[in-house]
Length: 526
Image (cartoon, rainbow, N blue to C red; front, side, top):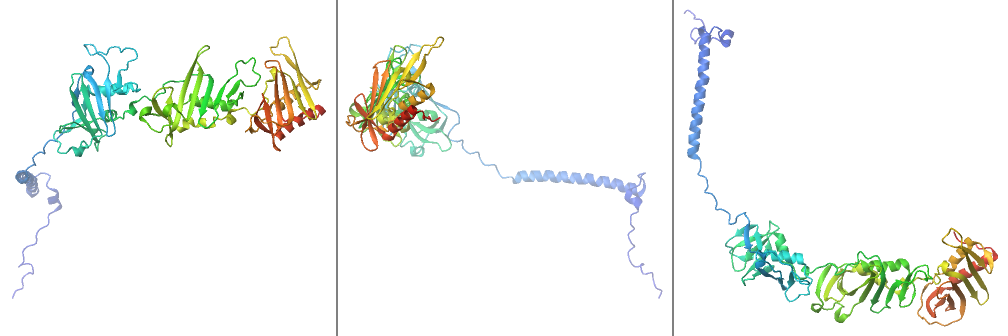
């Protein structure tokens, strides 16, 4: 048997495309060109198929798309503002505010012409008053605002026109009921409920209706004001511009009354300072501490209104009394003065005190820090503790004596041409003395400071040392005596009274300085 070729019985092998076939024939003829036309037809056919499929998918999706839900109902409120009250001001007679703990009525006392323009009020008449309390010092600006709401009031929105439960809005127990009454006798009452959770405004409704509105916070604040908060809290008088207090009297329960003032004439004043403690005894006053009293009295401010005196209890001001009474006499000009009085009562709280101004019935509150200076209104704090503060220009001579010795300092004054002040010449025990050292010795004598007030203003005892001033003005002389008191102190007697005690060592130091000056060893401290 003849053997056949091994490939004869199998299908012929597929011929691979040549590079020319793959690139295509440039002339477009032959097998390669035919392939190109075939390749152009395929993308076009594919595009038609894709478009047809897309159209089919669109119509299919439209048929399968679920129906849109029906639109929800409109909210039960609108965002536009709503006019609630619309009147002319001349129609408004009053506004009554009922709070949980009090009720008050603001009266509109204004008169208007036919066009609604306010007419001038008679002298002394207030535009607005609290009914039954004409003397109540009502803040006229705030009252005008509240009366204005009865003429024109707008809500920021309507919340619902059919509230099922007023309690949902705090209107079942309103913060305030506001009755707006008009001159024709008609009135409307409005309720202010709780604050809206997402707004600074509060719920508002006419009493007896179910429509609930939102009203802006400034109106709410005014229409929920307590009566006392409507009282003016400015001082009934002001002395902020006063530069001179002529006299200050401070009377406090259980203490000596203190009075501070000035010497009548600078020319005849023998003290270095013109400031005087006039009560409980006449003596020089400590300048800085007295100014502390003056400035504190002038700086009194009130922080609130507590009420009328007859309405309050335990203020410490009942029956004309006071814990402390302060009386200021101030200089308005060269010829005129004015007097102001305030009475300080007890504590309204830990940081507030009751205070009453002049003779009005209004009781105010002041911060305790404003009146803390009055704790120091005592003679011992305000008196000048120097026994001998005498202005050197008023002195002609000083004679100091003890049981064992004596010293004399005298001053002669020479007029010098071209100078306004004469030249002082000092003498010690009749002999000329160095002016500079003499002035320093003089400072030691007048600078002898008392130690404290005496408990006995009429103490009697042996005189330890005497200092006598011969003056060139009235009263002509002044005498200070140091009297035995005990082993540590001497009593200081002046004008017949022993008001002070001084330590013995202070007087002994003065005597030592005099002896050193005499023997030429005096070395003053620089």
